[in-house]
Length: 355
Image (cartoon, rainbow, N blue to C red; front, side):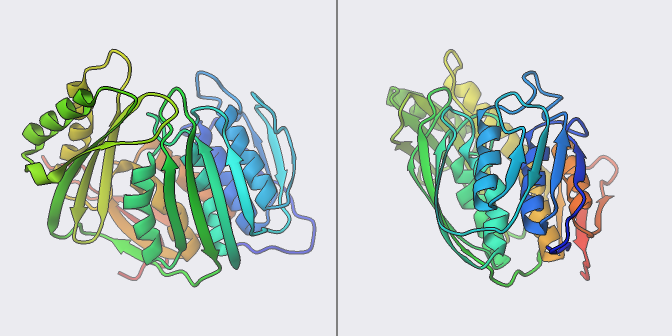
């Protein structure tokens, strides 16, 4: 891993139009810049999106990174397509980062997670904005699938939600407490192990309960679940909202699949979308699904080693591999293990993988 130094360093040049061309290039670049101390210059930010440049949630991520890293930055304004970011020292403390819209606050969290987790010290951070929208991981995915895995790597992070924020109103709020600087361990997830349980949950706020009831009925019939495996939960939220969660607990990991209600969208359609992802995951017989694969790359690279089996890597995943390689001297290898007439199956190995 590159280390901070006292001498002036050249900018790492990142083209935001490369690969998936979205906000993840920005978030990973900011996190890695903070961790390594390398200044970064990003052009063509979110160039492949219908509304390119920095939107509110991306600008919040930039300003969060600037605050915790005592950084100097240029280009931090709405719709900006270019940014220069030069970090100093990472500072723990009490922070509050508010998106101000339904833009994802969970993605802002992922920008500051790794710098605060790696640096000795304690922080309490409040994130406000969207917690449940279609283009980002919902809070339950972070809490139930992602954080338990990085805790196994030695990372000490606790998260709790105080108010859900559905699209389009937003207004969600969750709190994360970090204890940074602990020793990290590699993580290997090559097999899922025994399937323990499949559970389904319908979240609803400021809507008729019947919406959740119809979703759970569809989930029960479609996944063959018992009544005990179903849960309807009314939550606090500024505006109306609804989400369906399918949680697959296995011996070595838990995955969470979600879909979200919207005006005019039948409850059964929302349930079917979440079930489709869960079924594909179960059929693939791998421990790590598409979205989790993308998010495990950076912590494994920081740990220096790790591996997992997954489905076909997404463009998000392959782009993240490229961005990591610009900052860290770590080898990431992807091997296609798909058998003829079988589901897609890939092995991802990071760093000094001895298994």
